[in-house]
Image 1: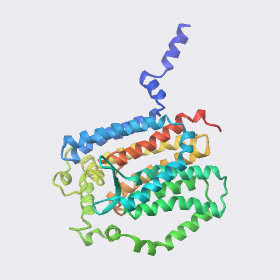
Image 2: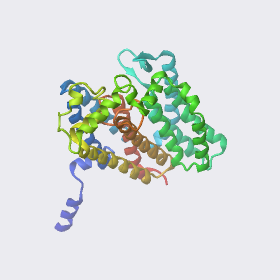
Image 3: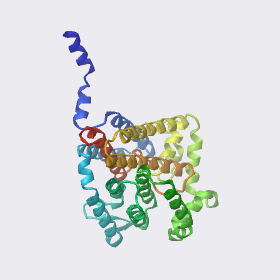
Image 4: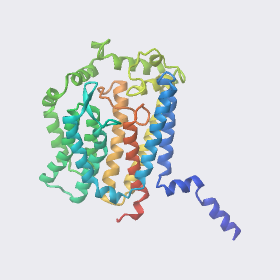
Length: 376
């Protein structure tokens, strides 16, 4: 009897493990997110020229984001499904309100000003759009007819175009990619995907004319940043210099000359990966990419283990959106994609994107920890 008791005691989870299980926290995913968040403080301290105030403000945002993640992890996916349409509708109303009443800042009309705080509805659509599409597709068994496919595409591209009009090209790309991911995971026919790609390609001249002047210049600078080295090509040129000077092992923590001498704009936000690459080199970048890869793998496991269509579609969409987040930021920093203003997930300074990302991980944890209560 003593041996069995010892075995049972040895196999039981730790106190922290039991606490996280009661909180509906997926332990592997939580550990990975905590590691990336801790790493963000290390690099933010350097990128902000050792400004303690920046770390203090970011720490408050991180705590709030983790609290929101924990709260959403408690919500049963059945409840998420029930309110998907309502959240989407509220988001659309807020997007219309932005176009009519939104506050203009830095040439963009993206925020609603409530006096004591500003709210950016486009961030809400990163979650509510895939939730709505997952709900719609889960209610309509495949194969969808052309009318249903048209409705599904409208659910994606109406908010996408409204966000692009603000203008916020980066967020519109993320919203569109998360919605398209739902369609892909739902098993949309390759013929329909091919027609969609053909339609998109043929509409590029029209889209080019819709873009704002600064957005068109970003595309042109992506093709040839050296054509305006002291103007619109400055960001990407300085970013490449920072990344290249890091070499294999980097200059060491606090050793980024591009950030310290203010050669690298937006060093704490969109271009923080360049600071990281300069200080920690190729080895450090590979380590960060491995952490991101493990997060994506864990989210894919959660997706595969989901027990109902709505949960699988939503989990797969949120996982793909996180991948696009990482790919777009690093791609634009190293010069293989145009600059579209997407922060590095969980690393860049800022509160809105951090809160939105942690909300998505809270939903993923909810899908995983509540799966035994869901019908097959």
